[in-house]
Amino acid sequence: MNVVQSVDSVALLPAYLAAGTAVLVLITDLLLARPRATIVVAALGALGTAVGAALVGAAGERRTFCVGADCSWIFGGRAALVGAVVALLTLGVLGLSVPALKAGRSPVGEYCFLLACSMTGGVVLGAAGDLITLIVALETLTLPLYVLVGLRRGSLASAEAAVTFFVVSVVATTLTLLGAALLYAVTGGLHLDRLNTLLAERPELRDLPLTTAAVAVLLVGLAFKVAAVPFHAWAPATYDGAPLPVAAYLSTASKLGGLVALLAVVQRALPADQTGPVLALLAVLTMTVGNLVALRQRRTVRLLAWSSVAQAGYILAPLGALALAAGRTDEARSAAYAAALAYAVFFVVLELAAFAAVTALRPTGADGGSLDDLRGAARRHPWRGAALGLALVGLAGLPPGLAGLFAKVTVVRALLDGGAAWLALVVALNAVIGLAYYLRVTAALWAPQTTSGAAAPLPGGAAAVPLVGVVAVVLAVATVAAVVLGVAPQLVLDLAGR
Image (cartoon, rainbow, N blue to C red):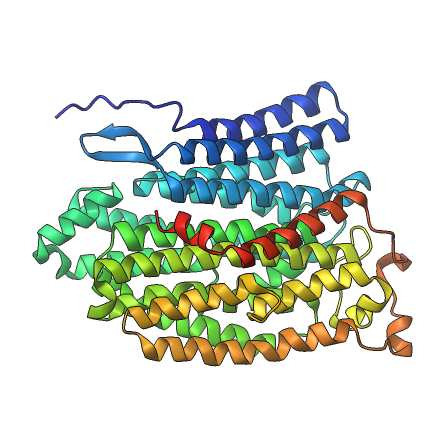
């Protein structure tokens, strides 16, 4: 067997562009020391990465760093979708951050560099073909966020959120590495496809207690990353303490990365009959607990955080169909994987639109505030309120938020095709529970403002500020993207199914 690894630079182009963006941001900040130039370089780099990922993915699947049939880098349609979405999310979050960066809330160079580094991890993650590349990419996506969460100067809540996020993520990483090490000890392989082949061809390996422990530990480590119940407690506090744009990134790009990693090991490496029951249980617990706790929230970001937990349960639900024999046929499995990834893409677009609207409605540098602060917001700012209302209705899965509606229909259809009608019923019941808080907040946007609400103080005595141009652009683009995806959902499903 030839052990010389081939290198396809075209396949690696999206990673080159993402990493090059981080380097150029550092150089620009060092040589020019002009915040506007640094932000422009970061924005152009993110846009170039998205375009590069789309172009490379459109040319068909490309593989590199291969030894025999096993490759560490596989860039196809799904990797292109993940890379482009992560890059565009980074671009959107950078736009939401502009007002705070101009106000000196955070150092511009460090902020843009860390965001570009995290984007690099997300781009690499979608193309990872072995456990080492997967875990390194996931940590590259996550590590800069420890700093970004705590980068808001003079904020104790931000520092506490950063410490919480750091401690939990270290535990999650340790468990993920332990699971990977145990799998290597059992099989002697690290490539995802090789692991699948070894476990399928040698049934005696699957019966070993060490294999069961390895699968369980690896799934638990990745469940922390997606904030699946009962490994979710870090998410609400971290989101609420982080600056609003960073919370938006955590809830979108970071969560998408964790889900892509989980999907990769479940689809390509681990036995479906072992992972299916665990994922079904995680899905039920995650969507149920997330929705029930969200009903009691009075702070905007905490509500969005618990909503995000519930949405992770919906995303995991199609994978729970693997617990049944009918869900493990080739056709049912392909539909389940496509439904999970497609739902994740629909969700992150709607979630970005929701955070963009909240950012637009709040003063520069302020936190998300309470739900009382949003009361009557659509009367004072019709377009911003309408955008937030559309995002919330979409997350609830109601028209005219067709992206959210098609996402839930896709999940239910995949579950029914996989014979998991009981899990489809749980998804439907939880969707009804979710309506309670989504519609309550949406109705409050157009409700008459109370006297106490009209005089609600803002941090530092700040008054409401006009909508900053770049934030308006991000809000408009995210809203339009949500509408477009709702009208043409099959585009995402086709890419997710490749």
